[in-house]
Image (cartoon, rainbow, N blue to C red; front, side, top):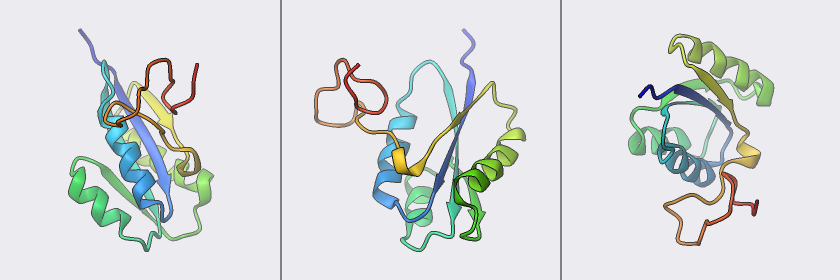
Length: 117
């Protein structure tokens, strides 16, 4: 069975803990092969080092601090093109994934962001 390659583009600026949580959730997805691209827009909180240590397969793109969301997404898409993904998943660091399987809370009936359906 073909598992589609999904390039998840995650722009971030100094949201280390939320970012690490989101990456754990993305790695738990079933039925797809995730290719995760994190655009670090001049992070100063150690998020880049923490991510690359915990998730060495993440593709890191560096920003100059002036990308904002749209510029970071564009930089991520440019990096994703080389991977030839079947799909793109565009994310926002302000609204990163909430509850996922590794959390202790009961996620039954919740969507990817931890909201009740």
